[in-house]
Image (cartoon, rainbow, N blue to C red; front, side, top):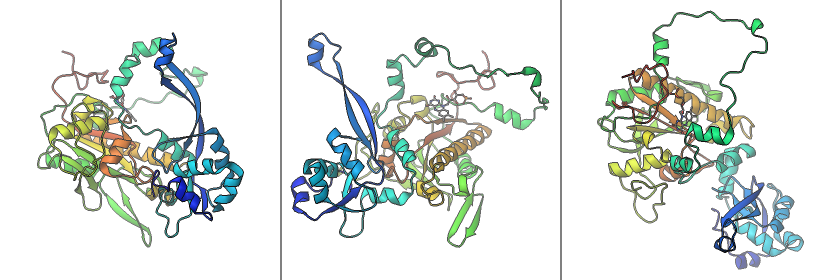
Amino acid sequence: MEAGQYHPRADIRMEARMRLRRCAAAWLEPREVAAFQLDDLMAGGTGVVSRLAWFAHAPHLSAAVEVQASQVPVLGAVGPLDWVERADLDARFGADAVDALLHAALLLPQPDGEDASADARFRAQGWHPASAVAHIATRWEGVDGPKGMAEQDLDSNEGLLRKHGAPPPHAMPSADPQADVLLPRVDRDAFDGLLDTRATCRNYDTEAAVPLATFSQLMARVFGARGIGHPAPGFDVYKRTSPSGGSLHPTDCFLIVQRVDGIAPGLYRYRIDTHALEPVAPLVAPPQPGDAGTEPLGDAAPRAWNSDELRAFARIAVAGQDFFADAPVLCVLAPRFRRNFWKYRNHAKAYRVCVLDAGHLSQTLQLCATQAGLGPFVTGAINEVDLERAFGMAACEQSPLAVCGFGKRAATLVTSEFDPNRRLWPRE
Ligand SMILES: Cc1cc2nc3c(=O)[nH]c(=O)nc-3n(C[C@H](O)[C@H](O)[C@H](O)COP(=O)(O)O)c2cc1C
């Protein structure tokens, strides 16, 4: 049962002997909420009026929900394990407070049969609560990044310096330089050449397609299986070119394929077991150029998107960063959390390891793409909620951590790249 599908108040009260408990994880945030009020502006104020409110972060819900101060003590009085009689809570806190928390799905009614609620699905994952709250609360939906940054005058280094002063130094000075152990300089070899030509690409050739063989080789090198191990009966692990905590490799690669020779543009999931692309029918309405976010599909049947719709979705994926949306291939790195949490259940480091795993895959992709003569990128500025909606992920089960991609660099530099030694963009 999802949030919002709980019985209306009258039905709940009819069940006099109803038992309930608190959801698995609920963290309370006292938040200052600002709102525009015309009255205030007309009265000579700024028009921005703020108030303090309580928000409950419950990771089985997709977003934090506001609760009244009078409801907060109820959450502190009901545990997440044992079912308690509703009548006792009504007597202590009032039926209105209990109703409101049931409607918000922060309190949950004891199910008659199997518990199929979002809370039950969350419990089955094995999340550490603080990690779950952090992950769910920091996802974006419909964020149009560069535009927002420009409005705050933070899109330029000058703007940042004006607002925050100088940053911490690029290198910490030594406490005692005489004691430093100088390391020998070793002659460069071809591998240094490869490493030195990796640079984040922000200028893609919007006509060029990636040859199928190059694409397939990159998938095999970065996300493919290089071997298989059998630590125990019923427990198999793949070997990849990147390391993974517990060797579990929870990270799936979902793809937005715009231009690969011989592959129909669309959404896909890379299958590590067969080295194949599984087509994914998009579960959002076809996005239009310039859209900041997605709309649910509603009753419409999913259909393949044309190239403009696919490009619009790529732009939403990378939060409005057009220079990345131009890439012919975008890889959405999304762990299936339970694959890792199966071993590291309720573990303080487990989510961090998932994030680090994704970073390793991205770096392998950066180097393999560079070796293939292509420009790579990675970004954490992504609209996770829109990606989850389109690919059909439940956030607490599987969710994107980063988007990376690759393709042929354009002939001309339009958006800046960091190439201080002019290895990619020779001086004219
Ligand atoms: C985790 C991560 C997130 C990043 N996110 C963005 C981003 O949102 N937008 C962007 O233009 N570059 C992004 N970058 C690229 C960095 O800006 C880039 O690595 C940095 O400027 C250094 O340039 P180089 O990669 O060419 O060495 C990201 C890099 C990393 C590792």
